[in-house]
Length: 230
Image (cartoon, rainbow, N blue to C red; front, side, top):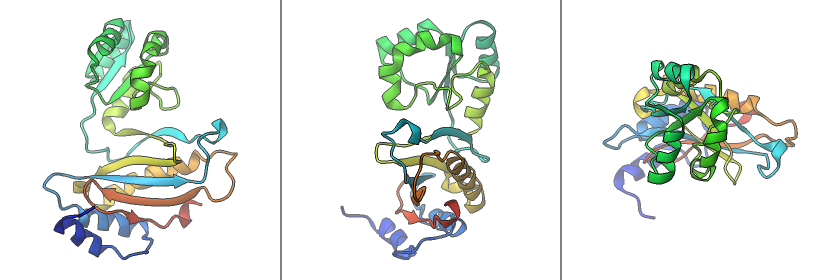
């Protein structure tokens, strides 16, 4: 794959084979963000677990101290007082069966986070095949199935992100925008990594955090030293 001059210039800033500490890595990431838009900084963490086993799943959610820099559109399945509370908390869409029908019939997916009160899961369950593959299905583990839908909306808007393993045992998560600067990005990265380390399954054997890298939307990967996480 052929890369442009800006990308190649960014690659030259990174020492080949070097594993950077977090502060150095986020500083470098900001320098490699040369696109005309505000690039997202993502982290990719390979874990020494086997996601095929239920007792080695790593999944959860964490509120990033400085948010994600993204405007989050929230959809809440709730009725009555809970629906009113969700609306008051700033939810973008609130409803019940009529929203299920809209998603099923119109393939409508103009939202980033889906939240549901527990009594609505019988209805929301019908959307499993649509929402599941897109990572939008509400789950108790991510805090998106909850009696306190207003709190869930507030957290989502404040920068709550969900982390989960993919099929290759890697977690991919945004930790903010390049415009945040190194200090805020480091605070977000530390918060996410603390959560991932705390979520270590008891069945894990050997090294838990195998490798870790960060990259901006258009930039090259920067390898992090993982010693502090194991």
